[in-house]
Length: 149
Image (cartoon, rainbow, N blue to C red; front, side, top):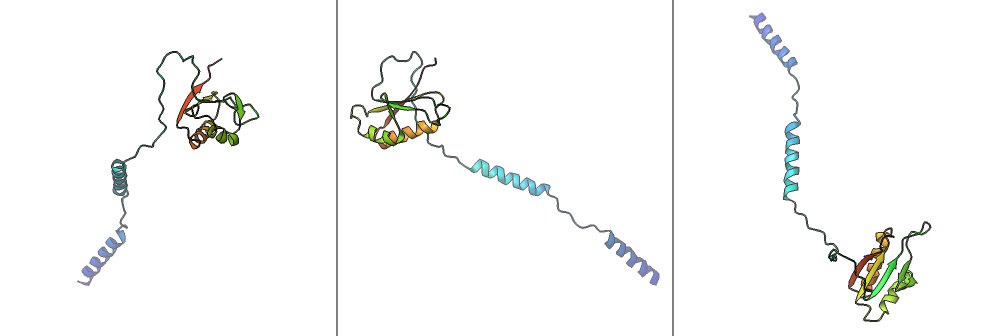
């Protein structure tokens, strides 16, 4: 009888020793994370960023008439300069002087500002001119490019 009891104990002891530690499967957790990610991506709404409204001219021949208003011509920058040379109605102008010149321009010319730039002019320079024009009270801004040579 004693031997039978010892055999049961040794059998239970080996079963206890044979048990492996429980493992945690990562697959269901990854599935839950992906489902949450998809849920938040689908339920999120994005608001459109306001941009600049641009009215493009109809296709066809460029107009030969001289534009009415002020014209800022920005030449392509040279190898030594970062910014191109700016001409306001034919006179060379710098950023520092442009605000006062636009502010003191005759009222009939202040209806519109046309920015005529070369193809290599940095956008930063054009946007700076636009900001100065807005600060000077000019609401209508047009764009032109120089014809290819």
